[in-house]
Length: 118
Image 1 (cartoon, rainbow, N blue to C red):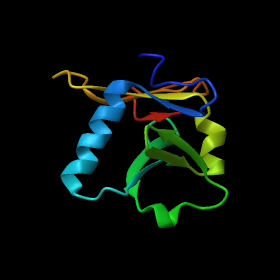
Image 2: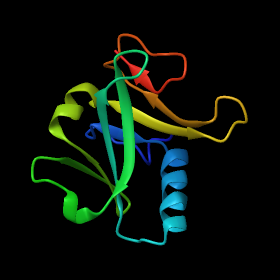
Image 3: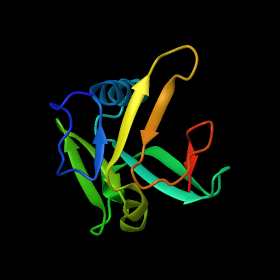
Image 4: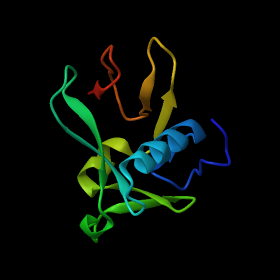
């Protein structure tokens, strides 16, 4: 992780690798104005699971937390932010264990797949 992409003032931090991969995915969709919504929902093997999806900017709510990464916005609803504040989103293209990785300082337990927590 590099400090140039992270800021301690952000509730959700992205590494440069995660930002590059998300921007590449967005480019493949052919829509320039999408943002990334990050949140949590009930479920998963540890009780709560992470959710991520692209979203139209018009769906951003007034109460959402919005973080800007060089013109790309990451959005999170206030209830999810209670569980995600301080989250670091990383990406690895390793053959084994690759994909998005969530480092959550609020998680007391994380499942083996790394996609859910309690």
